[in-house]
Image (cartoon, rainbow, N blue to C red; front, side, top):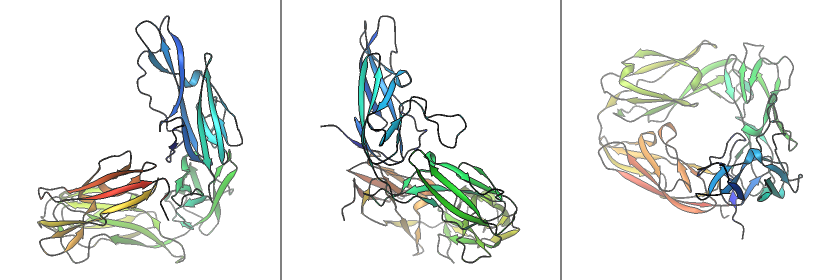
Length: 420
């Protein structure tokens, strides 16, 4: 029976890291065996329409001193037995949206659902790899904005789902992105748009296409003036922040057009100190907000976030820190079942000596006992668990970052497709 691997989301530029390439081709050595493999092992892969899969050909060379392995993808001739399902590059398939670039040899582009056999020929040797692809559903460009603020940067993604799974598939890296409206008030770099100062209210269209499999999606946008910055907090209002624990402040721009979804702007605002000693806080940033962690409980802190291009700002509430011992740790779940590629944001709460339970997931050490089954993020994305395997079991551990010794765990089971 052939061993099969389910493809996880990956870009066309994700290259295979080959191990055991120990000797190369030496004098008197000859190729005696050829193998085709992928990053995920096995001799076949289950993937989805419009994906790009990087394969590698590895030859065994025999001679005096034993055998050695050498990567021969670029010296092999590649072919597909069904080009209606998958085509494979010999360095001759242009990358959509690029200028003169081609997919590397051995890169498989899935153009439709079905099964195909990919063959590599090298020095009279032949090896094959199976590709099985399921159809995808509707393409959608996210985030689902209708407006952008003038003089801001916004990065988009292209997502879909397969017909046998509701878990989003990210096709951003294999798409060709362009603004199809002449004279649009934006400049583009891949899936990122930099808006100009105006004009506002003039529609323009962003397109993400997958020309090799004949699919595309569009989103109509307008530039629109902002009326305010909105700050969202993770910690409960009117409480002290325990020393060493974090407050996450989300930052969104609200448009004068109240029907327009807010735009996340945390990475594009500047901060001005209104009160306190900023050096007493550690700060980090993600696209959604700022993470503030008090290191010293000396002075209350207050910041003003400013979007200079729109001449608007918002003041944080005053953040006061106190030395408060954590008494217990509670996780949002004891166990979780995840379909391949699906994610779950685990939450952690700490009960402190003032009797208040607070979210503490950013300040927990998260780890997975088997990252091949499920991985877990740390730091600002702490507790985000992502299924990595067809089916398996692992445990996610959470430990408080202090001397309390408090910890918890979540038993995770992954599925090829989660049972109804």
